[in-house]
Length: 384
Image (cartoon, rainbow, N blue to C red; front, side, top):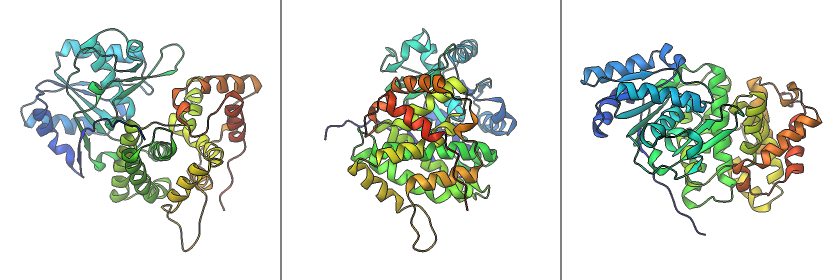
């Protein structure tokens, strides 16, 4: 096996950890940090808490709170213009994956110039980026532990993965108390996304001894608490498990890759504006069933199935369990979209262009992707 690991941010984890934010800002040499966030996070009170902690420590921070879901180059440019006027020397991404991606994207443009398309791929930044602290308020993307910013093209809405080792957060500050304010729908969708990250990294072709450690522990934590999230009965311990599990799944992505479920999901988001976590969740069971035709992959799924919490001696197949979660989450199925043959062809062709699909344990062509979409059109099984 031939592999090279990527570095991890310094992870600071624990309830109430946000109070230590000034210590980490000082540690990275920040004096004029920019908090990158969205209006919802500000309304939840998280921004004001962060500002108070910083002000009490003598640190004056600016706030850009116009992050949009699935940020585009235009959003990044607006953030960069704000950062230029504020003369910032560091970034704090506070929120979900979109806030952290916007902070990373702004960091690229502020320090290296150009547009986000110039950084599509990996290692395109010639100059150093400013120090960056990532503070997730959701438990899903794992962006706090990744060196990639996912930015959508302004016109096509196709996601561009813009990565560079210099974009990795100096510190990932994980405070599960920040996730308590999530609406149930957000908590469910981000949780299912994190679950998909754990499972796709577990079987992808570049998996290695390091990524597998992160994948398995992420799945164990997520599987043990996602039912409580779906039932809207999650305790602080459940929220803690979900947040740490999502971060570990992010580390698994950083050290390996994803697979066909994400390759299928991105075109659904680009063409039908289906939320990323929703799209990934709907496609994941069908990708798992296809991948199980590979004996080695099947054995990995069997190992993971032992961590699904069930009563007594019951057992359940991974794909069926995920469909049960989707059913209990009351998510609409793919059949709710108006997908004819033309649309299926467009989606399938777009899926073949997604780089994550290249790392799926079973190689897939356009016809395979179309079969996956067709399978997902079937109604979600009713839960007894």
